[in-house]
Amino acid sequence: MPGEVGLDEFFKRLEARDDLGSAERQALRNSISSFGHFDSQTDMVKEGDRPKRSTLLLNGFAARYKILANGERQISAIHVAGDFIDLHSFPLKEMDHSVLALTDCEVAFFPHSELEKLTTAYPHLTRMLWLLTLLDSAIHREWITALGRLSAEARHAHLMCELGIRLEAVGHGTRDKFDLPITQTDLADAMGVSAVHENRVVQSLRAKGLLIWQGGMVTLPDLEAIYQLAEFDVRYLHLVKEHR
Amino acid sequence: MPGEVGLDEFFKRLEARDDLGSAERQALRNSISSFGHFDSQTDMVKEGDRPKRSTLLLNGFAARYKILANGERQISAIHVAGDFIDLHSFPLKEMDHSVLALTDCEVAFFPHSELEKLTTAYPHLTRMLWLLTLLDSAIHREWITALGRLSAEARHAHLMCELGIRLEAVGHGTRDKFDLPITQTDLADAMGVSAVHENRVVQSLRAKGLLIWQGGMVTLPDLEAIYQLAEFDVRYLHLVKEHR
DNA sequence: CGTCAGATTGAGCAGCTTCAACGTATGTGG
DNA sequence: CCACATACGTTGAAGCTGCTCAATCTGACG
Image 1 (cartoon, chains in turn red, brown, yellow, purple):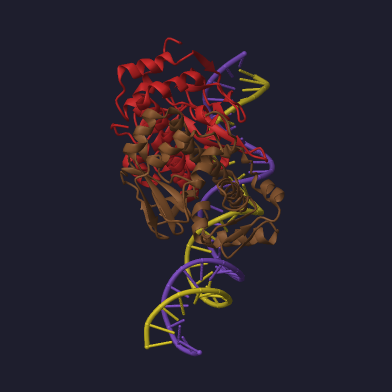
Image 2: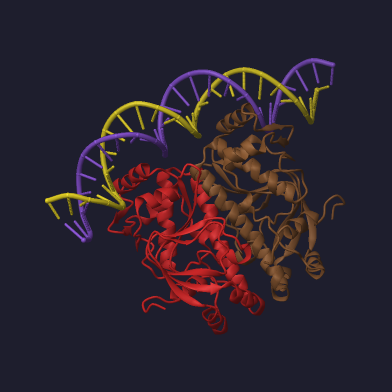
């Protein structure tokens, strides 16, 4: 495992929703077969793959995406440190989309055979892993709402709000200031707009004093205002610790 | 339980992905606390609710939705017979969206206490329930792609293709002919367009000979053509039986 | 200093929206 | 059995959001 990254973000993400026992934590650690690295802009898994392991993102940013007939790309999820990028491939078996490293990424691999053992021996841990995939699902629904009914500007604002909270929850920055070393072109493919329009959206948010974004660092100077513009309600991220 | 509905659709939906043992089937049956009915256009669960049970749709159509600040509605999922409408509330605890009965609905209730027992005693069954929520997730991703990158016409076509397959898989009609007793206004809120435009989309698909929709019955006269228009690839529904 | 990826700008166009009206089928009360 | 109400579908016209194409700018890097 690279010296500077570990499971801290992953455990923080889990413990934000429910306590883990030390046996559970150890069982998770023991389920890791190896660690790895992906260069920026390389595929971590591909549509049609049948992974024998799931990949936990320790550091960096990744995106799930599909390519359309005309070559356009739609990003359906952006993943940060502490997220599994393909835990769903454990029950689902076949990937129905690809996952791209948006930056250099450090990862840990969990063989499905080990995950299956976990589901037999640790029911509560199983529900916690299930929960992680349900959080992805909740975020998907929020994106659907944003894509269907919000303007591109509100949608971009919404994503900034979401990433701030998600990154803060794993100790990477704060809800109003965090690293986001990815391009406007990548964001455009998540927002369902052209790169040109995405740029106009960013400029409009800047002009309104709601977004500072330079050198891969995002600052949201007026959280209350951007939350209102984005109709952002943090509850869909389920950051409440309780028995799961 | 009403005489005309049962768990057939649910078991078909599961068995399309993996075999169930008779003990597992029985355990599922025994987990039902009661049956119920919802009138069309009533909420089955509401955003903010903390359900103590999950609801399996035995018959009818339901939709997950969120309401926006300006009163607009976005539907993020359409559920058919055999679908759990809120299985995710078991690990997630709090509903981050509401679910509406689009038609009269017959349901079965599974108390979370019973589901928790299942996750302790039946690891494989637990993974199958997990799988069901992952199928919802896969559909969410497909909707995100459609909302972000397809025209309203292709998007509507895509939904027709999807519903055909999903309904066929539970024995309600065939992929090219099935009941869909819901309004264009409801569909518009799923497609992320205005009711007026949704109507124009429907007419355009009719004019192209790809859609017949009258009296709540959908026929897709040229499956190959509509699949191509919609860029529909059935694989995201994971209708493959294998060890999960 | 040249190169290249990414960001920015302008201009014209297409898809979808809004508003408003009208059509059509079904049901209900007098 | 008619008068009316209601829900849903359909149509037209004007306007805005976001698109495409094409060019230009900027900063990082070899």
